Amino acid sequence: MNNKKDLNHALKRYFSILEGKAKAKFLLAEDIDERIEKAREIMESCSLCERRCGVNRLKGETGFCGVTSARIASDFIHVGEESFIIPSYTIFFSGCTFRCVFCQNWDISQYPEVGRYIKPEILAEKIARINAINVNWVGGDPTPNLAYILEVLKHLKSIGRNIPQIWNSNMYLSKEAMELLDGVIDLYLTDFKYGNDSCAERLSAAPNYFKVVSRNHLLAKTQAEVVIRHLVMPNHLECCTKPILEWISKHLNRDVVVNIMAQYRPEYKAFRFEDINRRLSYDEFLTALNYGKKLNLLIAD
Image (cartoon, rainbow, N blue to C red; front, side, top):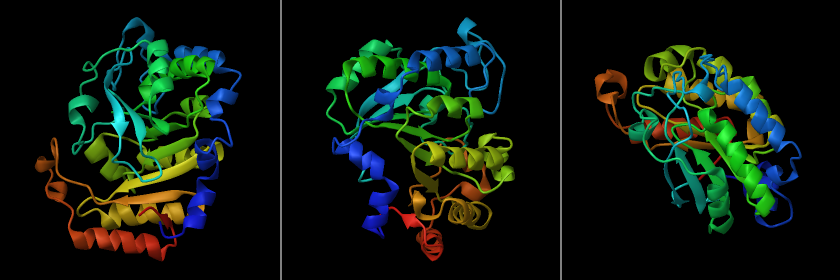
């Protein structure tokens, strides 16, 4: 990290929870039952994400994500995340609100029927015993499973385990969904992919991407602390990486942590797309990293 003092400031409350000096937000929430009820109401004509499919998922109807009941593809203690996050109890849901042609988890994100349903109270009991420093809700994407996650937190609150909650997401949520997260999520671990709508529609089938995701980053910062991940892709420095980093610099500056990631590799259907059918070059990554430093962003090591 290029400035440890700034890191401690940007993630002050998160670190305070880890040190036992503060409580995770869900423990302080007095309205979890109401949040669950509201989330289920939204699912009757689903608008948890900005696709707003309008299907009744409580009756088994499926929208773009294909998710009906929450199915967990895997859950384990992850040690491959940012240093201040590990060891992280990471819960991977099946299904996603995107269709990323390069998805590295395509075998779960594009197949919402895989995995298993775990009763919320059982998962809460497991979280209470787990030897990790946080709970990391991911996928796929956690958004279609918001009501289920709130149910888990309800049971976890009754147990009393003080553990930070991380929302690890593509941030394509609706405003209504963001409101339900306000007051229960301690850290947003976001994925900011594209600097324009054209790339988002072509590579992830995500219309109106930049407006939605930039809005939700601003909302997230008012609710909790934020770590933004940006996966640098080959041939997308000018159209995606630089505009994203510039937007962060202008609107969030060093109040958030930014992880500029070099892990891109062509997976799933990426070989069909000439611009992303190879690995990222070292020069491309250095260009992205140095641009972030030039903008004085708080960059994760």
